[in-house]
Image 1 (tube, helix red, strand yellow):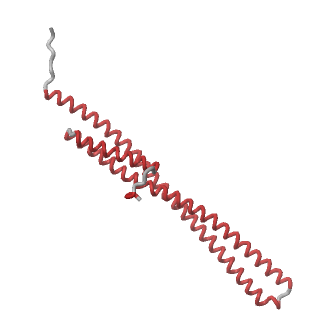
Image 2: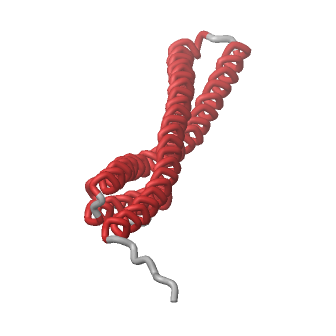
Image 3: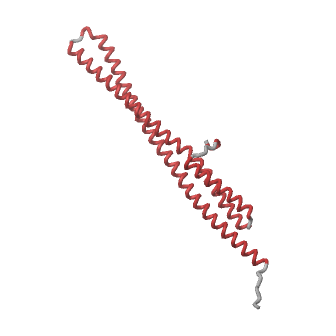
Length: 195
């Protein structure tokens, strides 16, 4: 009968340590992938927020330009109206007709600018709403990144110390980070400390 060689205690411990190291290394790689996705999503949220802010600012500048034009036409209408009241009796019928046409045209332009302003304001507020949506998402990605980075560090420490409790803490931190990242995408739960 052949003799079976039983591994020594040190050999068993080394085999167990290698298995643990491989397991932690694999999960650390997964943490890194989730961190990369989180980082990309956070950068995208920031860029979108800034883009919508810029577009909203452009709309508000356009609104101000329309507002100034409307004010110019309103002021001119009032000036023409006052001038007509003052001079109407001494004016020729052709001049009165010309003033009335100008006054009518200026009031029409004033109304047009007023209507355009309302559309521009609605568009600016819509863009601000989109900006606010991305603004609300951004902190979730930031905190998720931090937790995932901490997870990677703790996993590395668990390999060096061959410590399962430290690995478990890194795993919990990674799960929490992944949940925050998912919540950043979908805003299912609004956490009060992030708003």
